[in-house]
Figure 1 (cartoon, helix red, strand yellow):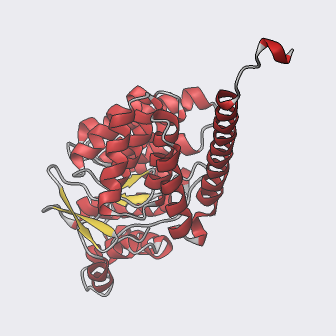
Figure 2 (figure 1 turned 45 degrees about the horizontal axis):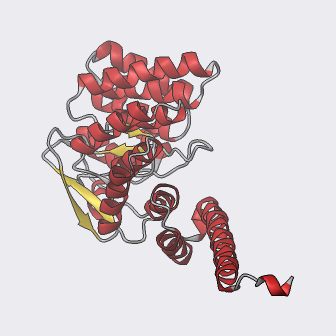
Figure 3 (figure 1 turned 135 degrees about the vertical axis):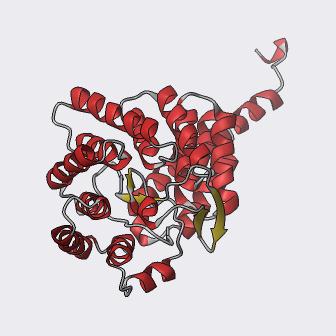
Length: 324
């Protein structure tokens, strides 16, 4: 999916991606092409201060504006625009340069922490996140990155996941406009098998980001696991209303119709549309869709055969006693 602002690098096999999300207390979203923008009055710092699990989320600044800002004479705008246009290595260099001239600067540390996390340099990112937390105790980014590092690099999975959960909750409580940590908490809850907690986290993210796509997709997955098919279908349908070819929404809505409503025809139609529109970069999802589609077609074939056999049985006239 194309985006107006954010980095799109994959960070683990769970299909999590480091993402910049817009931070705003009362955001409202709108469509722009096949991307979405969240409107608000947050500063550039607020715009790039979050990193979340999931694919690219939302932005307050159009991509062409970020490109313009990369040529700005304002060092803060320049390093943030560099980060927002997915050049994390240059962003790290600019942030280090800014911090040499302005030790302990919040903007510099913010970009440095975010850029290192985007570049999968989790140990370094956590090191600077702790410095950021020490200098600015209410930094939701500091909590969020420490949680993200624990979630993605878990050694003692249960213990590390619990610590990650605590960091995400701190980030959410610290910043009323925190979107990223709510998404992270939702993904973490799904990974831990807690669909109820995941639904609550994605509900919170959706309320804060103006029902942005990735909150709705996570919300739909959580409700589907809870067996709340109507809520799940509603979330995916809202995504498809804005983005008719959204592959994940098509796939999961197909599963809702197959497993929840037992409507194989509708499930088949969503899967066929996914296979027609999904790009080469979505190979894993295409393979999953193909596998589910084959199951549906096999079930329909078996059902048709059973129906034909039953019809033949009904048409047969019982033999008369004289025929024995």
